[in-house]
Length: 382
Image (tube, rainbow, N blue to C red):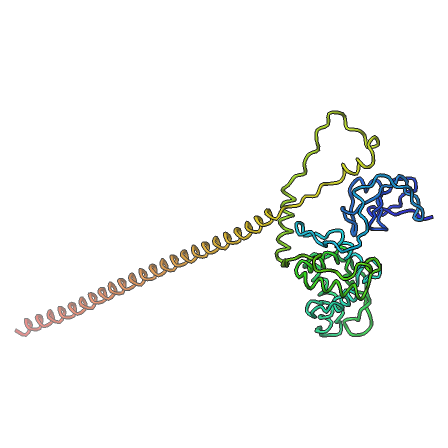
């Protein structure tokens, strides 16, 4: 008989040990240690109801359940709101819907290949420019078009922080001959949910039409009795990708600044781990969720805008100061050039005066010499 496997540490859970089982994720179980630590791995969510089993048993036989963690939620027979607009997170109904779509498209393999994701976008009549894989294959030039499409899709996932796993695929070589292994990004369940959640918030009307097209073609068995997805379960207002990023940044900042409330003081010694019930242990270990309000988000967005304007003003002032200093340096250089030119002119005038005096002295000396000679000759002939 097969033992249950822990989704947190991937270890087998002994049949006589405690096991935590999710009522929504049918194959999700945690051992006692991971349950105490509050380990959560996709597609499981903390809001999912869970059952604590005193004995894990085997995969084919389950022990009797005890106190459940959280209220028991009956299976929905009608559509419920898919997103919580206060936190911009998918509700359990939204996670269930997107998980069902992922399982159908990925054929329960746990990953969605680029070809499968591109086919899904074709099914919902997605514009060619939004279908990165198909658009690159059609517009790429050269022998290795598939390699270019893989690189473009991977860059797209990295730009939006979408989770994916890399798997080796055989593609055409760079020389156009033979095949070579290349790692292609395959969407995980978490990445698919994040990607479609952003699209649903960005364009709820289109997301509603796409969901109905998918359900009509893939028809997951668990959704057959609910009919078409109504528009009312999607957000009523559109939210751009930039506003989504600003909200998540504000929430992250609020989470860093906030502190978890300290536990109430104990009048008696704290009981040991074995003395408390498993329900109390799990409740104590479970961290509290910190959700910023929309007012804090709006203040953060306004603060970011004010900071940006202040930086622009400071930059403009620096540019003006640099321009003023440059003008002063140019003016000083011009003044020094004029002074040098004036000094050169004065020196030229002085040299001209000196040369004129020297010429005058030479002429006078010549005239004096001639006069003395005439006087001597006149006295001699007398």
